[in-house]
Image (cartoon, rainbow, N blue to C red; front, side, top):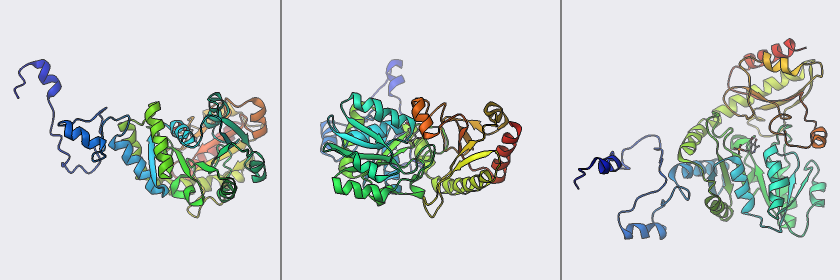
Length: 380
Ligand SMILES: Cc1ncc(COP(=O)(O)O)c(C=O)c1O
């Protein structure tokens, strides 16, 4: 067809769109919708013969990420969302409705704590936040309308390792679902679906992506629950963009070698910090997996350390209110991730300005240790 007008040509020019270009990496399907040749072609979508109509509903890049993470977590199905929080919200809504009750660990990530303590109750969903240290206290909070147990496989910032098998037992006896945030451990170290979780969620912004350049979430688990969560994501418009999905999926390719190196570096750092006279306490988990115990080390520095001087002296180790990049970074839970906790809760959990959460990167462990030691030395 002749396209004589500039106004027609400018919108209808297209490069070769053939899918058979054999591109090694998946292209970024940066499109909000897909085209159809005729009504028969459109009907094929509704009959399930073709997959894509509108990107808020499905797009190949978020699908590729979700399938990839489902494979690593060894789950039946997966769905991607715009952030870890969006995936957590959709996952919870796939299990509970107004009037239902959730028992959740009180020491979860601050944003999740806020969702559980404030947003869900405002929607008529009852939530009890309690200590999961002791499964008796979890059992004691179960009511007739309880539907879900929620926790993190390794908690933030004190790295408590959840007793997943114990939770599974409690859940089975009471016919409850279990949802686990596996962000800190990653499927390289731990696959909670093996230990009885029904749903596993990730802030893919962290280790799955691994390069601090994309915000994303992924939910994995039983097919029927994931499909319910997908409907929530579609209705709430909390889908992941193709580009963020593409970046995150690319990051997952190196998850194994990153986690391997970062966990080894973290172990070496935790050992060095344990010997340090100006470190009150080191939090580094044990028994997460035979592959390692993760790449976060939390330290409580002595009162004698001036914290502002310490942060200024850290040089290439920057304060970053996130974690899991390839560079070593530090975060200050009392001022960022756990800022919204009440002062009583902060005191109860021991979160104060001397607590530093270190996200250990892929640099040489000797350099990481030396950099932290000289910063502590400079700030006494
Ligand atoms: C353990 C954990 N879960 C969930 C989230 C929320 O993820 P996002 O920031 O991608 O929404 C975070 C963020 O720091 C986190 O640390």
